[in-house]
Length: 312
Image 1 (spheres, rainbow, N blue to C red):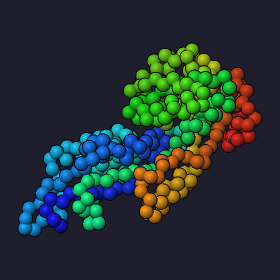
Image 2: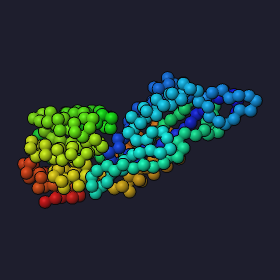
Image 3: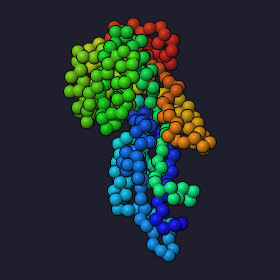
Image 4: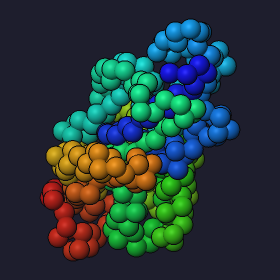
């Protein structure tokens, strides 16, 4: 190894992001290094002669940049900080709530002989989530209630801000407007929802840890009844609690298959940044006809025929 070489660290990382864990935007992630360092990469200290070692000695400025990168990616992804133990969430299908988990990922950044000397860090990402495609959720609300033109959501910007940006764009494309109210804690959800009264035609629960606090979900159910507007939730359990519609991923096994497909593409030589992030492709629809009747909704036959669970 020659003196003064910098290292290329390649990390194709498949992120399986469950339920309330937000799906990172690929375009933002693949430019994270470029935006943070202006294309210069992460620098190693010059190694002393006469016998340079393989010991990594990042420059102090680069260590600071790595800290910045760690914070940036954590904010963008909503899951792991770059250390050996990370906390995340899986989704409890039966209860319809996120469950905190902790696991060790081992060493994430390592030096590889084949990548030495290229003088920069090449960090690329792809992954899959259990989130239901936004297009299908908005389309379901429109079919269930054709007069829907304004859909209300509450969200925590630090958890699902990226998701709301996507949803606003998709809603415009489908001819509806998303009225989004930001909250920082579950207790903020009451005032945020009250601020939408008379301004929305439907309410949509996002896969957001802050929003999914029991008191927030219960108040959204109450708000839906009081204002006689449809509520789209993200589990059968929430539909049984009183939401007229629940749309969730239908197969954990298929989510795993999608992850395996992504892994195979990477192993076949395709760059991770070229592989789009995935959402759930097998879905489960629950319809609560009791609630729909109380809200004055006539559920179309098309939706009932498609439903996996119908609560009568």
